[in-house]
Picture 1 (cartoon, rainbow, N blue to C red):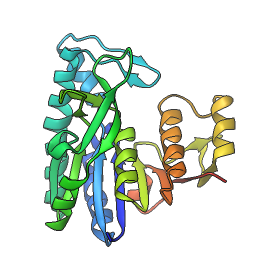
Picture 2 (cartoon, rainbow, N blue to C red):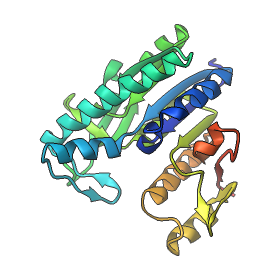
Picture 3 (spheres, rainbow, N blue to C red):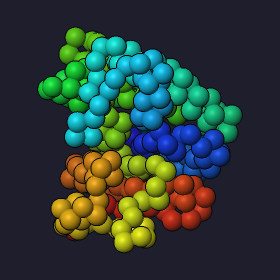
Length: 248
């Protein structure tokens, strides 16, 4: 039986602050178990698409992705961002190895209708993760995954992290971004239940990208991941540890 396991999802905005790599590495090193880290990078992708004159738009929180845009998504996420994060963690004392959802058949995804080459995870094969953990490495995972015919597809990083956490039996899933947890009425809250979340989404207090992230967190809790947390910079700097998501 595997020991304790934890999955971090690190958002693109947080990745733009190099000062966070060292405390993130310290938290990873302090955990006595297997760690996997999934990263996003939507802002970085958007900047590159704009530079190349490739139009993109979002529908219900997902980026509509043409084949031309997909080439840029893979270049940025699986290429520059993945390797920069793995390198930064390595320099901070974490034996990180950068991979994507395509490597070792880690994530197979079905296509989401009407969004081009956008996928949602259908299957996670953790064999490549098990091999890295056996070698005492920490996988750093870009969410680009394999589609039905093996093609590269754009998978939301929150979804990828949740799917991996479920499959490996993680005890903790931590969503790290540039926002210190879920902020309501001007303050970060330490805990939210399903009923509170639904009420706050309905009245607009939780909206946009945070609404999608909170729903992903709820799905993770429903999938029996014991601890699901939405956190930000403060967690890594010894401050607010994050918002814990629970059913009741």
